[in-house]
Length: 580
Image 1 (cartoon, rainbow, N blue to C red):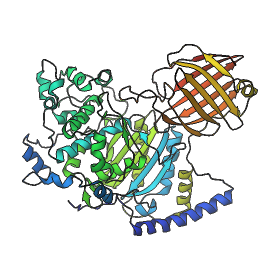
Image 2 (cartoon, one colour):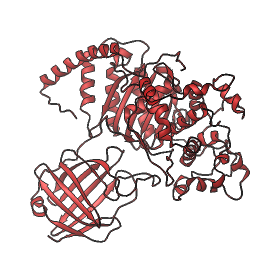
Image 3 (tube, rainbow, N blue to C red):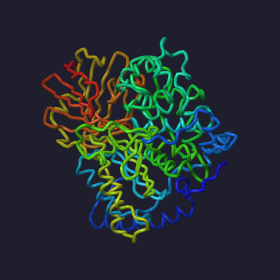
Image 4 (cartoon, rainbow, N blue to C red):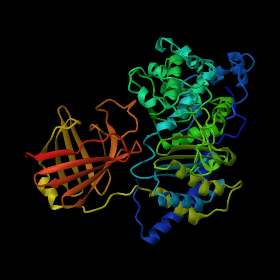
């Protein structure tokens, strides 16, 4: 098995590391407890393309460092699940900011700046020199739960292609049409015939615009992709293209007989100790590729650390270093705006695109997904940052990383700062999204509790609703022709549950949506905005999104309005009349 020559900090936490971290953190914990007691606080847990590669497979494999015989890829295939598990670990090592050359005060300033700019963060993890030095989740989000990645999924799909290349199953110069002979149009254009795997990876298919939202309306997404016109020569024009990433997923499945989530299990997820990822699929059972992956925050951080270490993990070369280099270096320039809102050099979406990774300022690169799902790899600083969020300005989030965290990273350890470290730990352990506040009770609650309201005909198929209020919560129940959908809701506190209520959760794209009846986790909290208006927040804490559900009571009638945190399909205002 290949051995890593570079420093490998990201794998199992050794006993020595545990002892060291425990000793440092124990001192911080003592200060933290003393500070908390003294203040009376009460805490509750909760493109320049690289030199041209020849189309010859043997030469290509040799260029990637697999030896003259082109057979070195065999070393990268895990021999068994047990071997894969032995190579990884459950957690990254932990340390303190100052021990790894980062100021705790700077991390606090970063968190304050994010809050001041109203970026809704769900989780944050900072890794320096292979060790986690700051981590936090905004309740009801928590470390054990997956989070929807949106386009951050693309970097994992690219990695699946990298493994397939390493195993000699394809090269990035292979023609895309060669994999799908039954899905091709009757007339194959010259540009379609010329389309290579590398053009899919670099989003330079040659399309005029992204075909994704049209492609997903069909049963056969590959055929729909091939039917879309390609007016430009492949490799010459960048157009963001999630359907192209789907095609990468379909190619890997075609070659391996496995969905990419299964294909990555032995090669990536198990070696890194990433448990429980899920991935949405198309109608034909192929992982959506360009979106649809859900994974825990630490899984994101481990993924970034693997790339920072050039594919090395716990002294094993999990992914070829040559592929890491190939996948994360400049391939094509995004179109420059005619009237830029900021200098192009300060726009992280204009630094060049790679193989499903973005180049970024300060010699960094990243995978990212809609609303602020990030894995930021900073080679010059030996750092990785993982973020999940629902933000309206992803550039704004990156700006704060460059402003606060980047300059805080020093070459040598800093003097210990127990007081500030304790304050940082206190802040990170008590992060929470703001609960809507109003009144905790209303006379209307007693009047409508236990009553059923018959709903007017609606496109959600819901027929009735009822409310059961108690002192610290309520249960709102919807019924359709076949199913009862109860949702437990705390009063100005989160109540965890799950629901398959039609129309939930909000989502950005229809393609890959789970089948009707699939339950989603949610945390619900409600408050009375006035005597006759009960407002609930439903947070789907394995996605970035939430619903605000407003129930307005008027005599024996109720109107229920759903407003999503994103501009997804508008749902009807439910109109109901009391029948019991």
